Length: 330
Length: 250
Image 1 (tube, chains in turn cyan, brown):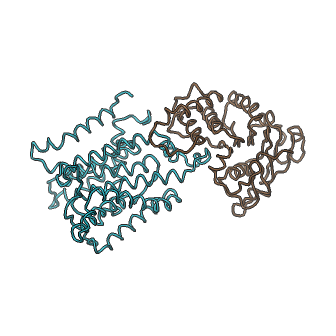
Image 2 (cartoon, rainbow over the protein chains, first blue to last red):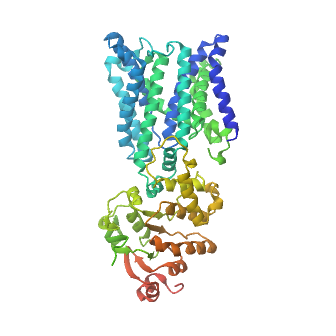
Image 3 (cartoon, each protein chain N blue to C red):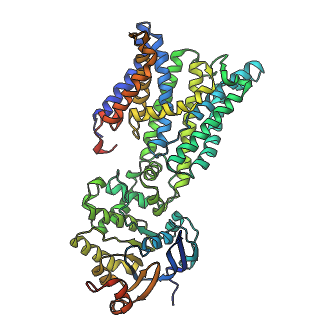
């Protein structure tokens, strides 16, 4: 494998991400650690969704539901640990295990039903499931209903540095992201990955070759659901807060935008997409220019929209498409 | 009589008011190449669709090696050795030639819940795929992206993929469509000896190829077989002449 432009860019990106906290510390930029932490966590969710959307061609429009599951496990866990004295629920390892369990069960049910449909119907039914879980969360008065719930404290992970330190959480999230990227890369080239790719390109052909495609797609859907759930676990810790808004369908849409922006179907693309999405949002909403009494920053989406359209029109492969010529495959 | 490899019994398929398959019965026997010809819209592809499981028949039964498979899903029929090629070239566009065939091999070498080792470095998949490409004459193009192949080469690839599944019967839906004369000749040279080991149901418009290869020809018109017999018998059958072959070829 020669070192092409994309690989070089990935290396530089990882180096920058590793170096960010000390650099930010030098210039008193704690804010950037928090901002990029958030980007890393959403990148984890985007990488997870890309696993089914990019590799497998399954446009799940309800992926934020799994973020919600992970987040509510953390939020509910710490609450019960503090208010009801069920201390083991405040333990991060327990919470991670429960996140994996609940995400897997939810993904199995949602996937088993949704994957019987195709195309637009699949998009709509995953959207419906996502919104269903959203309204369940709204209805959970015990966890604050619509208003959500502030965390008493972050997940306790004995043996690891304290997650309540933002730098620790940053590196923990970065570690999870790198792990998921490596897993995606391995799986993409494995037998399972080949089947997933084949299902995206031509499912009918796959069946004629003898593959029980439904089974493989369902397993991929569950894997992606669990990975996204773990992103939710991290997000709750990062924001010290949970609310139904985390699983609103617009969040699912944001994840899809990140993937398309970064480069759909590429292992690293969603990371660029998530970073670009959050940095653009931060930068654009901070524009201080005022026109006719309106501060441009407040209407940042007005600029963000056209930028997105331009990138999608002129850079077919997203940001990653700039880095890697398309014709040579992955 | 030995049991037929593949048998359709009184198959019926309607699309609304249109009867695409009308009480159709036919067999493919061991060692035989059975060709089905008929004008456009006669229901040839619908027939293949039902035999492979892509289309559900409204009536009748299908047997593979004597086993009833009428309602069996496509992938399971493939597991039992029923392989097909598609009328519209149906290969995996973003993959290389070798990757395409390796995927076909993979389909029949255990389950694919293997998440870690790179598939293409697995000698079991690679060697079988290379063998199939050798057989079909595409070996020199194995690392080419499929999109860069000529139409004829893609048809060959389609055939290599079908063969890589180690089929016990082949259903070929117009394999020569769009091929040059040279490519057609090569395909005829491949299919001729192949039918001894793998019986073939061939749907084809190229009459020279059909008459050169077939042991038996059935003529399908409006979903019904109006005649079935040896190439010589079909050639002189007046009904067939009137309905399909016309005066120009045959």
